[in-house]
Image 1 (tube, rainbow, N blue to C red):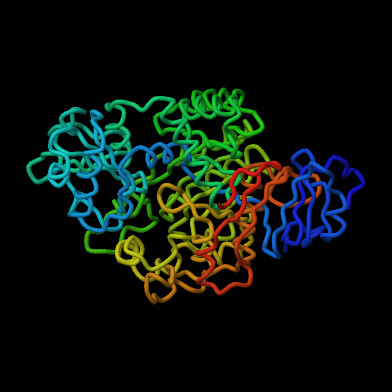
Image 2: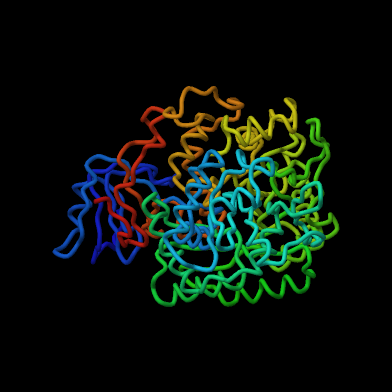
Length: 544
């Protein structure tokens, strides 16, 4: 109990509170004053702090946790995409794509028909092209982008509208797929997607603001109180700042701003420094620099130490040269930015670690918690380097299971020996790495409970059938997974002093759940429902 508990605004009683704070790890009740945790204790003592206007929440014996934080999410872009465009995430055949797009096209008369969320583990250049999309949308340009954001496809009118024709040169770090005659098939890889989007009508700031509000409501329904938007540019910063100024940002948003391979180091640092200076509010800040060092394995743009092991073989280059990586990482580290890296292949992971090491040698050690996200492939020799360099693993456990993009695509491409080190979460933790869990939404669900279940089981939900666990020795515990969404996530977002645990004096960001995810059967974790989400003492979601 604290002495300074007058004017208590909110109390939660009759709960099983797991605070994630070592000083007071468990409590039955808590009190909130001015948006912060003012007291922890038993229900009788906390109830005695209430006055006539105090809101009282009886948890009915249920679990209360600190609010979850998703530290790698594309909140603004995916919010706009999924709230406004055709949702193709359920498509599992070419006919599904045609049916969904065709039905969606009839709902509006906008100049373009756009779709999002198709699964690149199933749809590839072998079964997806402009001719298929012509069946769905014959009368207007159409672009659909995969859930991973690294693949897209346009119909014939879309190709004509953006000027994609035989002989169009590939953009830097991008590729236009062509047929045997040199005609574009409509498939776009990596920066070719951005090339096409830059030549299309752009959604307005109002569209993106509406997408943020739609997405933050979805996040709150899943118990998320804070995020890191994993790729922002000037428009993202502008929209977030306007929402914060209007009092409409209920999530805590940290952001990692994009650095391109064509940037100069000086220009990139200058641009991000301006973003950071303009975004220091209580709900929105820019704190890190985002680098894509490679692509994805599904379109063979993941950079590997050794070539791919399948019949096609080959490899992909890093998207930045090693000299660029070392120079840019060192400059951003010196300017006291966190570095946030997309790395799928083991070469990309190693290059990111090399860059962090170069920065550390040049600038000394400081608590940056530079992030390497995804880490699908990992050479075991690099595991100890995470702890040695103070680099945090930012992982998406939902993908660590038997599903087409892993067992049908990735495993055959790298062979059985390297497959042992796909999503090696247990090994990273045992090697002393700090680890945050996240979703990469809209690549896949942002539901943290489905993600935690997979981290614990390395299996799909039981409803999808009995499937053996994928590399079961890399499973992690429930407590480690919850830490990855609370204390570790708060540290990743540089807000651990304020959030991440329900310690006295910290922000009252908390969630009330319908079950105890520490004790329920493994395969029931993913079915967890959030009853209430509270941010800074304000109820931002309540289950009806």
